[in-house]
Amino acid sequence: MEDLISSTDDVGKTVHDLEKAKRGLEAIVEEMRTQMEELEDELQVAEDAKLHLEVNGQAVKAQHEKELQARDEMGEEKRKQLLKQVRELEEEKKQ
Image (cartoon, rainbow, N blue to C red; front, side):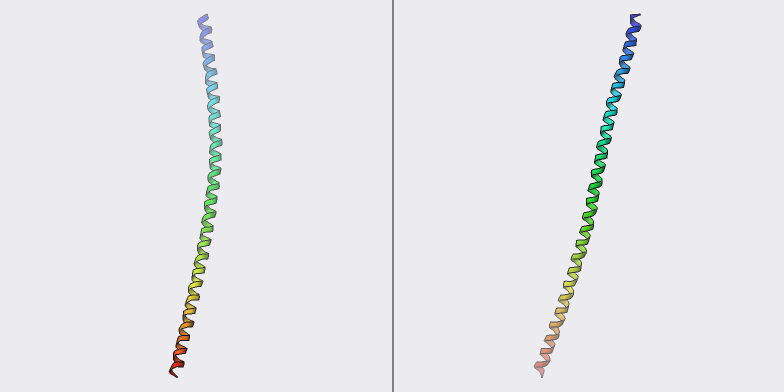
């Protein structure tokens, strides 16, 4: 009879230990889910920041190219004006 009671206690103890282990594992799983959600949020923030920087970088590059083009055009216009003045001066000299 004592063996039967002892084996019942061992089974109950084992079941209790397994349930305790299960609760512990469930807590770990929940903690890992929370960490994963936090990491996903951080990743989204980082991706948004990257996209924002790329857009701003493209805008700065476009503005810079526009300014360079305007400078080139102004330089070309100035060159043409100076060339015209040189020709006019040469014509005056000939006369």
